[in-house]
View: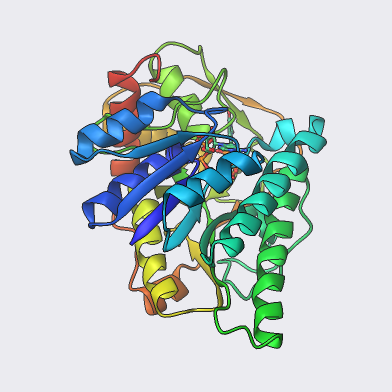
Length: 342
Ligand code: NAD
Ligand code: UDP
């Protein structure tokens, strides 16, 4: 298939591009490099030994997007592009709605006008809010999102679903096919150590924070609360290796090929690890010490969040293959080889 990967220079997009190319798909990337660098795409080319058509453009730039669609006939779009920092979204809601919703609206319009109505969308476990059940299945009702970032994901899921529903009602012979992938906590990096997560400034997320402590760039990790109702009091999450996550997108393409309508899949491992579990696993996997202090809870955090990945297993034949040791090793391998990122 010929696939437009929006945000393909980013963390998950670059890893997915590798898997798509390795599986024989043709990848075209559009990215505005607001949170990434073109070097990531060059590294993907190095890993895959392929040349990638790369457009530097903002999704909100309709003229640029129309040109991309005039140059290429796409079978599907995998839509990663968006802003993703929860805290920042609270202080810059307009920017988040404009970029995530506005960018997607232009993309969807240009797609439909060009007869490409197949899309895989990067959603998030955050749409479950404070989840009504653990492990979380796709039937779990969506919860109240505590921040604008989460609301953009939840709204975009609704918008996409409405497009498909209207097509069906209108008897459209070419209705939208939409796969909503709800990611849990992606960590790790490609085994080559050539691509990985490259956060700007001080990382918000646990794993990049730990790797920067390990590298001596940050003095210690602050654990946000040890009084949660969990086995050791620290927050529990479902960490998933980014390469496994990337492979989930390949499997989602098979759903698109079968004209799936709207389908939702959790992409997680189904296992929960606490912050302290991760610190210990990282120390053991890499033979390093991670100094930490216990701090107050981070506002908006929940105690426990992990998936049931059964639906993706049954319907897509997908399951995460890498465990916590690989996640910790590959995260450190990337950081060690690229102390200053790309
Ligand atoms: P990332 O920031 O590394 O990648 C996103 C890419 O999109 C970046 O390269 C950025 O430059 C680009 N981009 C942003 N706005 C754009 C625009 N208007 N036009 C063109 N390009 C634009 O993030 P990621 O971790 O790879 O996440 C990819 C997607 O997955 C995002 O939509 C994110 O919300 C979602 N997601 C991520 C996580 C996570 O923990 N990383 C979890 C759940 C969902
Ligand atoms: N966390 C932490 N210290 C940090 C960053 C994160 O203790 O510097 C905790 C956080 O409270 C949560 C877990 O690590 O329990 C995962 O946080 P992250 O921001 O990586 O992902 P989230 O699940 O919040 O999206």
